Image (cartoon, rainbow, N blue to C red; front, side, top):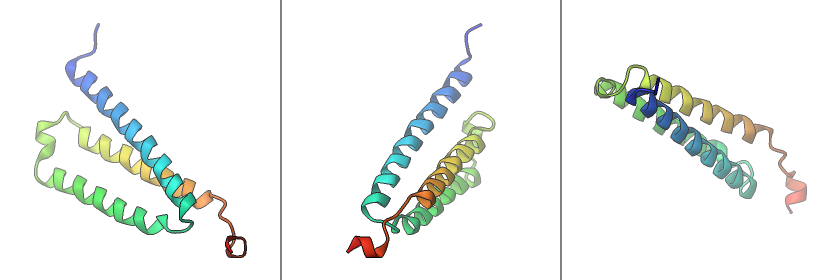
Length: 101
């Protein structure tokens, strides 16, 4: 039995979020490599922005036009990406100040 349109849309959204998440992780690692120690502050601003937007979607009833659980699922996936980025950045080996110059 072929998947329903809702299932196909949900799968497409999950794949799109996964691709964006991987791209974000790559950019975050590149930024942290070029500017050691600076990404943490930026990550906090990005996290606050994302959380605010999900809160606005939920408060304005955006979930009524979406399949049940879509907003919650997307919020969970995005939060997972942000946590993964934080963990990867935290475990990066940064050169000491002595080695930097």
